[in-house]
Length: 145
Image (cartoon, rainbow, N blue to C red; front, side):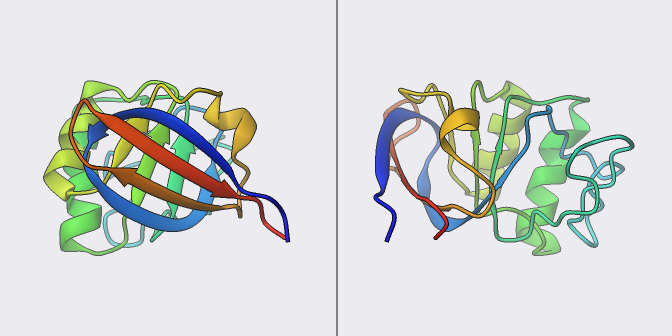
């Protein structure tokens, strides 16, 4: 079994989550027209993850792209239509995504000790403990077997 890695970061939204990673090298928007609230399937033209579902995933991406509609889009996907992610990890979580994650009550983590896009691969199992906004977040990554 592959050995797990543990990294510390900053909790931008608190909570605990575990799930399979979905990793994007490209910025992501949670706006309803880029990831429809009804499906949770990425539909951004030319995006590397177009056609992939964010449902119940730990979504890892550099930072946000798009407008403030992404904040309400993230909330709606998680709390209303139930097609949203379990958590988000970014190099830098943008305030747009922080607002959505707090409202949706899912962890949002950034400033890991290592680049999350280099350390986490799609399919890895990721566990997050983020007890307090602005406090320590612990991210455990178990590589896909």
